[in-house]
Length: 225
Length: 225
Image (cartoon, rainbow over all chains, first blue to last red; front, side, top):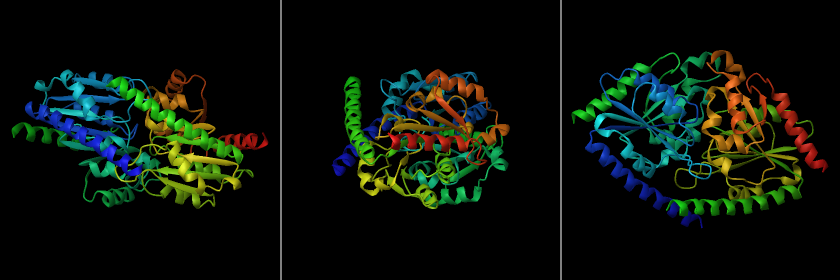
C-alpha cells in the first residue's frame, strides 16, 4: 500500500514537471524571468511585493496571485498599476493548498507576457506542498517571519531546501519577541547550508532595497542573455 | 477531467470519514474527549498547549503531535510530564501537509487511552488541508495569530468554518502592529457567524485561563456522560 502510494505521488510530480517545463518554455520565449514566492499564511509575501514593485528601475513586472479563495491580494497589487492575474484554487471542495504547473498553464493566456520582464508568482500561503510543485519558475523565494519562531526550518525542511533566497520578515517586531535570530539562521544552515538570506521589514522598509535590487538584477540579467 | 478529479477527492474524503468514525468509536470506548488543534505554522499551538497543560484541574490530558518532520513539539510537551505521541507525516517525499484519519488510526495503539480524559491532537501547521480531514475528534479548535493579518478568514474560509473555537493569539503584540482587531472579528463572522472566540497570549498568559477552563469543562462533561 505504502509503496504504491509513493509511486502514485511520484508519477503525479513527474506529470507536473512536464507541464512546468512547457510553462518555462513559454516564459523563456518571451524573455520573462519568473520567481515563485512562497511562505506560511500571513508571513508578508504581498506586503513585500507591494514594497518592491513601487520602484522597479524600468523592469516591467507582473504578478500571478494564487489563493484558495478571493482576490484580496490581487486587488492590492492592481492598485500599484502592475498587471496582475488571479488563480483561485477552490473549485468545489476545500481548495488546493498549493499552485501546480497545470493551474499556472491555464492562467498563461491571461498574462501579458510580451509586456513583461519579470513575473512573480505568489503561491498559496503554506510551508508544505507548494515546495513540491514546480510551476515553471527560474528561482524560488520564501518569506520566513520572525513571529513564526526559530524552529520552522527544522519542521518544514523541504521548503527551506527548495528555495534560493529567504526573506526574514517583520524584523521591526524583534524587540517585542522572545526570538533568537542566530538560532533561526543556524537552523536555516542546518537544512540548506549557505542559503542566501535578507533581513527585511515590509512595515518599515528595512532591507527592501536589497530585495528589490535582487529582483531587478535577476530580471535584467535574464533579458540581456 | 475536472469532474472526475472532484469525484476522486470526494471518494478519498468518504474513506477518511469511515476511518475517522472508527477512531471516534475507540476514543468513546475509553471516554476520551478529543480536540483537533489547527493553525498556520508558528501561530502558537504548542505554546498555548504548554500554558493550558500546566494545570488541568485533575483532567488527565494527553497529546498527539503531527509534524512533517521532527519531534521538537513533542519534546516540549513531554517536559510537562504529559503523555505525548508523535506522528511524522514525512515518509519519502515532501511530507503530508495534514493529519488524516488513517495516520491517527496507526498511532492509536501508542496512546495510553485508558489513562486519559482528554486527547489534544496538534495538527500540521497549515490553514488549508487539515480542515478537510476529520480524524475522529469531538471538536476542532484553531489558533489565529494577530501577526497574520485581518484577512485570513476570507482567504482560508473552510478552516474558520470547520472549527468550533478560535483562539486569537499573540494579543501582547497588538500595540506594535498595524492590526485592526474589529476587522478580523468581522471577517470571522462573515465566514462563520457567531463562532466562539477567545483573545489570548501564550507569552503573557492573557486569556489562557479561559482556554484551559474550556478544555477542562468539555472533558469533564464528556466523562460524566
